[in-house]
Image (cartoon, rainbow over all chains, first blue to last red):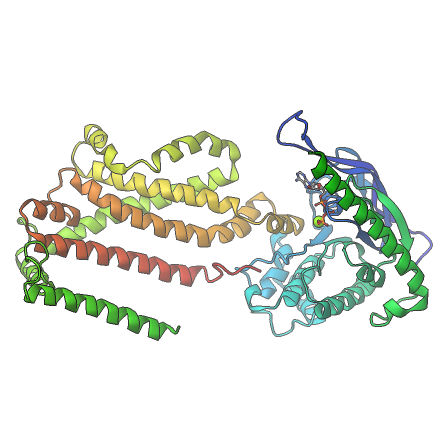
Length: 277
Length: 257
Ligand SMILES: Nc1ncnc2c1ncn2[C@@H]1O[C@H](COP(=O)(O)OP(=O)(O)OP(=O)(O)O)[C@@H](O)[C@H]1O
Ligand SMILES: [Mg+2]
């Protein structure tokens, strides 16, 4: 990485409180995030791990601009996030494609909304489809494709606006193991040429270790960032032998233990909750 | 089951019931006054087609009813869908109008007949109003519910891709709700066709609903049954047209990705 590592995403002391339905009631709301601070430098690939309900999606939503922090600051390239813009792309667990549009119309949705000329968006759209192995499916509808293909269309749709930041919320979580491996390789390949800053939420430690430069582990609710692991090893990484790679063994064990601890705490929390009710 | 097999079974079933019905008439199992045989109904149909019923040709009864129902139905759809969509998009508007709609919707429309007569007289206006109100309420409820079913993440994806509020409405919410809109329109044409009978209770002198009611007074069960068959067949045909339109215009209905 070059010397001047520019910060793209910065969260400073972010709390997020979701108000309950009964204002001021005992069960009045949820403190989803507590004092979150994190930084991503330009072109970095960071994975976010943590127990279910710890606030991973909430962090992505804050950075995307769908939601505001209760306190603290969410900065992208030095300015506070106000609303969603094409500068930040997002890929969800479900492909969220538009079933009334063909593959090519789905992929070019962004540029078409922005009024980009057809001759300017078609060539890159075709290029992305080719990179994603979707050549020949341009005129298919999403419901004629497999789940993995749909997620590739969603990836192409997000990437065609050349966002500086890509937020991914368990994008491969619904795919089978084989397809997931393929998608991970594909993602890394594209990321290596595009150098987009990626914040990627996952439950899968091996996925995180294959993809990321850094892995952040969050605590159970209210979510805090408890550990920051820097993943060693040069790229390109070998996806098949990663788990048995000696340089990875140690960190893999540490991350797993850290995540397990947090998941266990979150379980104890919830059983404790239900007992005390 | 293939569509052919299915159709074959359906046709066979209908033919058998008709045959049994005819047999019951021919062999005098039932009094023809209670249940005239299909052949008698057919004769009546031929006679009415030639001579009309109560000085009005049969085609005109049909035309009057279809015109009443369709006119009220189209206006209801034209007004109801935009209003329903607005209610789905705007929670305050929904809160303001919903109590009235929920009160009126399950109300049997026959109960409104005396009032409509007082308000609009016994002309076409009161009939139009009765059919309109029935269709309208069901379309509004269907349309506002359809908007609420739009997947949040899909709207978020569109926002991040740069779509503004209008574009999200036009290119995401509208196509997303279209399949459900079609379904609620289908439901409402059935409801409108039902309301037609109520409407033609209001001092009409023509129309299929009126013909059925009037013939009942004279114990002309053959005409009553003919009227019922015509009402049913026309209702079925209207529904079928909407189903075909739905298949053609919203092929993504029920297919999510
Ligand atoms: N809009 C909301 N209103 C109220 N509470 C919310 C809202 N969104 C999230 N929460 C709460 O905030 C907490 C964090 O939710 P979040 O979706 O960020 O978790 P997560 O880490 O993404 O979980 P998962 O791994 O299951 O996706 C949860 O307790 C959730 O119930
Ligand atoms: Mg989540």
